[in-house]
Image (cartoon, rainbow, N blue to C red; front, side, top):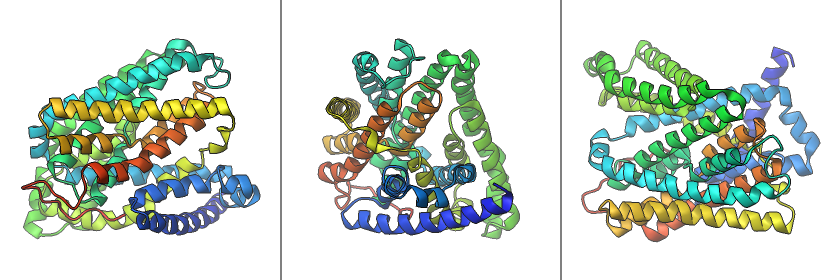
Amino acid sequence: MTPPQLSVAFFLQMFVVLCICKVVGRMARYIGQPQVVGEMIAGVLLGPSLIGHFFPQAQAVIFPKESLKVLYVGAQLGVGLYMFLVGLDFKTEQFKGKAKSAVFVSGAGMAAPFLLGVALAIPFFKMPGLFSEKARLFEAMLFMGAAMSITAFPMLARIIHERGITGTALGTLALAAGAIDDVAAWGVLAIVLATFGGGPMVAVMAIGGGILYAAVVLLLGPKLLAPLGREAERQQAVTPSMLATVLACFMVSAWVTDAIGIHAVFGGFLLGIAMPRGVLARELRAQLEPFTVVFLLPMFFCYSGLNTRLDMVNSLPLLLTAVAVLVAAVLGKGGACWAAARMAGEDNRTALGVGALMNSRGLMELIILNIGLQKGVIGAPLFAIMVLMAIVTTLLTSPMFEWVYGTKRKAVGEVAPVPLEG
C-alpha cells in the first residue's frame, strides 16, 4: 500500500475501533465489568473470531494486512503512555512499606502457576498440534510456565484505577507485585527464545539489561528530572517545551526497554515512577490522559484482538484441555497470591483482593502468546486455548474482586484518588 492508501485505511480503522470500543465498553460497564474488559472483548470481536469469520470481506477492507504495521505502532504508543501515567500515580512511599509483601506475593504468584504450566506441558507436548514440531520438551515447559504465570500489568493497572483503589495499600501492593511478576515472566520468555534460536544474548540483554536500566532510572532519574519539576512548580504549569522534554524522555525509555526485550510498557512505567511529583505530575496527567485513554489505548486492544482466533477450540479434547488450563491458571495464581499475602502479614480481605486482581492476564498474555506463535513455539490450537484462558480470567477478575473485597467498603485510613477514566 502507498502512504496515502495507508492513511485512508488508518482513518477508517480508527473510526470503527472507537465506535465499537465505545459501545462494547458501555455494555461492559452496564453489567458491572470495567470498561477495559469491554475494550478487550471489542478487539477480539473485530478480529477473525467474529467479524473476520462471518464477514471476511468487510474485515479485509477495514483491516488490510499491509496497514496493521501502522496500527501496531499506535498500539505500542498507547499502552506505553498509559503505563507512564500509571507510574505517575505510583506511591513509592507505600511501595517501600509493601516491598516485602510485594516480592513475596510476586514470587508465589510466579512459582505456583509456573510449576503447573510446566506440569501441563508434559501431556500437552504429546498432543498433536499444540506445540510446533521444532519445539523441544523443555522449551515447551518453559513457555507454558511463563504464559501461565504472567499478570496483565496494564490491565491490572486500569482495573485498579477504575475501581478507585489507586494509592491504597491494596492497589499499591497489587501493582508492585504485578510489575515484578511480569518482568520475571519476560525474563523466562527471553530464555525460551534464546534456546529456540535467538541466542544467549537475548536472555542476557532482557534480564541483565532490564535490571540495569531499572536501577539507572529509579536511582538517577529523580535527580536528573528534579530541575524539570522545580520549573513546573515555579510556573505552576507545564509548558509545551516541558511537555516535549517529557515525551522525548518517554520515547527513549520505551525504546530502550523494547530494544532489550522486555517491552515498552516497562520503560513508560519506570519513567513515570521517577518523575517529580506535584505540579509536573498533575499537569502531565491532565494533558496526556484524555487522548491516551480515549484514542490510543483502544488501538492496543484492537491490534491484539486481530491476532486472536477462538474458533480453533472446536473438539472435546481441546475443550477439556482448555478447562484444565483455566482451572490451573485460576487456582495457581489466585490461590498462591492469597496464601503469600496472608503469610506476609496482610489481613484476609486484602489477601483475597490481591489474589483476585493478580489473576487478570489480559493482553500481556496475548503479547506472549503472539510471540510464541510467531516464533514457532506453539501451534494455533494451543494459542486459542491460552487466549480463551486470558479472556475468562480477566472477565472473572472484577466480579471476584467485588465479591471478596468490594470497592464501596474502603479499609480504614485509605483514601482513593480520582481514577483514570476509561
